[in-house]
Amino acid sequence: MKKRVEQAIILRNKEIAPDIFDMVLKTSLSQDAKAGQFIKLYPDNNKNLLPRPISICEIDKEQGTLRLVYQKIGEGTCLFSTMKEGDTIRILGTCGNGYKLFEDDKIHIFVGGGIGVPPLLETVKQTKGEKIVILGFRSGQFLKEDFEKYGAKVYIATDDGSVGFKGNVIELMRKENIQGDYIYSCGPKPMLKALTSYGEEKGIYTQVSMEERMACGIGACVGCVVDTKEGRKKVCKDGPVFNGLDIIF
Ligand SMILES: Cc1cc2nc3c(=O)[nH]c(=O)nc-3n(C[C@H](O)[C@H](O)[C@H](O)COP(=O)(O)OP(=O)(O)OC[C@H]3O[C@@H](n4cnc5c(N)ncnc54)[C@H](O)[C@@H]3O)c2cc1C
Ligand code: FES
Image (cartoon, rainbow, N blue to C red; front, side, top):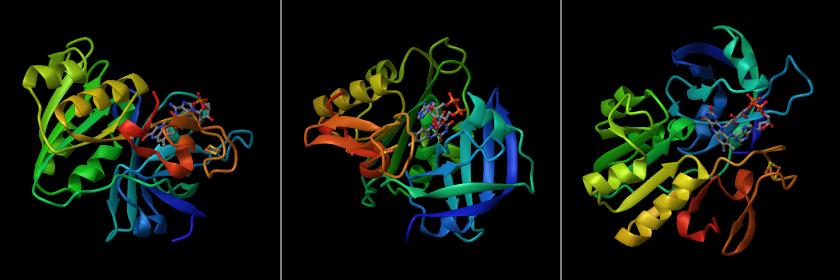
């Protein structure tokens, strides 16, 4: 369906970890949303701010809702965090291509770093077969129980050792000798780069979701380009999900 702007109703907006907010929106965009896509939220109280891209964390077509999990960082997300149940928010979507899903009975590995964790939840929910989830955080964690609810075995790595393994996700994967058929990932660029090498070494097809800074979010400027083996591509239009081996990191 065509990308469109609409007013969504906020059904929930609560803090689930320090500065991490869980928002549920009633919106017709839920009907054509795909795992790994994102929407843009307009901070309408401040007309100078561009809409902010936030990944779709969960889709409920029956209830007509989208769940987003976002971190309060700057002006836009601070403003979103003050919004209440029943408020409306202007959104644009759905944006980007989402993950290629593989339905067959294989071993699926999902790797998220920090605020790259949320888009993996709907992806896990829609995937069949064995599901291994590796989550990396600076400190603490969020969404672990949600992944477990959808049948995944969850490993956690933290920089400070406050939860799970002390170290990064790649070190954890090597320690646990994680093997499988497909990797779906989202997180900071250095993590995606190391993960693509891990996938190449083990012969695992690796999809990476890039979180480049964005301006227009609809392919009209060149605010979000990444270098690929096929030339420069726009993350908001051609991505955010790419085959890791296509990206020139
Ligand atoms: C495809 C995509 C999906 C994303 N999904 C999520 C998500 O699910 N949850 C979440 O918390 N965050 C997500 N982000 C990052 C989120 O968009 C930024 O944290 C947010 O825009 C910051 O806005 P701000 O006004 O609070 O901060 P400011 O620092 O005031 O933002 C200033 C400008 O920089 C851009 N910007 C700042 N940080 C980022 C960033 N890391 N990535 C991209 N643009 C940035 C903003 O859009 C804005 O134009 C995603 C980014 C992209 C590109
Ligand atoms: S943000 Fe404008 S082209 Fe991607």
